Length: 112
Length: 111
Image (cartoon, rainbow over all chains, first blue to last red; front, side, top):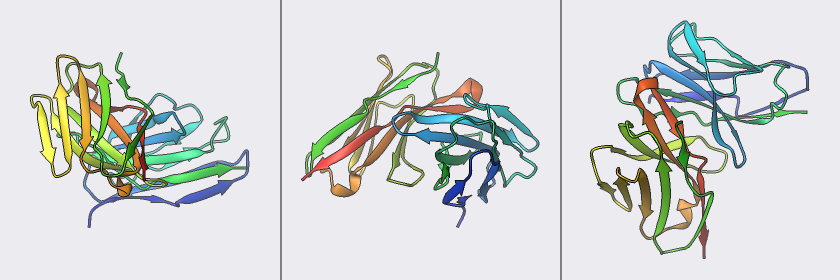
């Protein structure tokens, strides 16, 4: 079955360490997205990519980095420059023709 | 600018109908969506409506679109405990190839 997989589901890191969240899709979708979700804040767009080897900053890109070397993969690195990294991170993908996103099941990152 | 507004909480008795409302700002949106998020999970697309439609029904779900007022609603008939979740309204922004999400409405089911 096609889908979008985020791993790991839970991640704990010490303050000051970089951490990379994985997102893989086998839906042959062109576009991929990273969102951050905090209680009461809804979804906030971090980065998105509409094509391989290209990506754009979203609304809250500071302290994050991404790469899009393959169509299937869009990893997100949370760097030590991110002031408040503890959150629930959601990855999504879509075809640009129709819209409507398919979401992964999320990664909960806790920085201690 | 682009914005999607929805109330944050709704409480409904089991068996009653739930109506979740949403307003959006971009009149050029082609699709409007409702997503459901259960605790600790990602968002699941529940239903969507094309902007030239007024209504869409799918089993217990009814979506109403008032394009003049930029108002979208989701009605869940015979609300069950399994409907307890956060519901997100979203609009597509054609020129940016993006979807803008509301902050989500948490639906609480009363026994």
